[in-house]
Image (cartoon, rainbow, N blue to C red; front, side, top):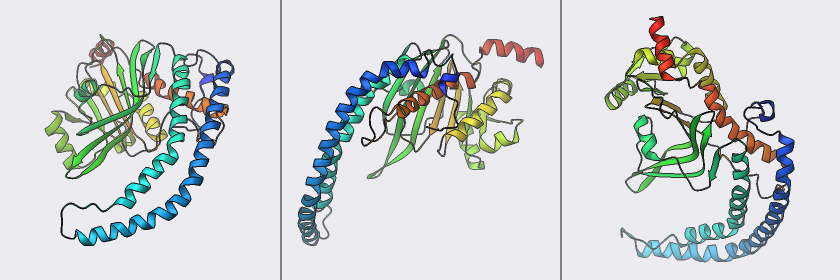
Length: 335
């Protein structure tokens, strides 16, 4: 999420091991190479557009006429060969825009690993994904039949394992496939430190939603002290004491701020085993370079991508991932 109001990284020495200018100085030679690749693919794109317009103008009416007669001839039949015009236009569009995808892929493969390396032991994989086997026990992953992902980052930050990527979960319903979640998946791992209970945050405030959560997760509703927070989230847990101290005022404020920064309609959080899973629904396409018409040497776009990644890493600071054992001892002293 590229929000200009977010804190910039060069103001946070812990999150940015080298300042922006030093990073840009190293990146500029690669950006110059990418600019040549961009100009080549932009030329191909413009040439294909020029070819595609007259071709579409001539061929589409012909195929539309054929589709019309196929529909009439095959009226009442469950199988039809109609749709040639749609197939043609879709293929033509894919052919025309292919240079844009080539440029985006090359940019990501050359630049995102460099940005990931700024934050220590981090790796980038354009086609990797957070393992579903690690997310499923969270009890917040929507029911789905297909799982796709891109732009996967993994590594360790401040002693916490972190994986994140842009994901899409879809579910087959009859002949259709619907998207049940699209956005960021962020998985934090404590390692040997484990939560005593299982606590989740959801946004379904209906009585039916509460019944569904109890029935499917075995967790009970927790009452939180912050009315504004309860207006955003419902909290369910099997350890009421830990939940009350886990979702403390600092974490509540952090989650409210995070929720407001991402333009979406859903955020789900789960504290379970040694993991924290955060699903942030977003309509934005993350970790993307600027449009092919924008020069690759545009340093503002590069810093914006760097900021986007560091904002994800700041979740570790924001959620104050304390040692559950230490927190439990504090709980024991206060009750």
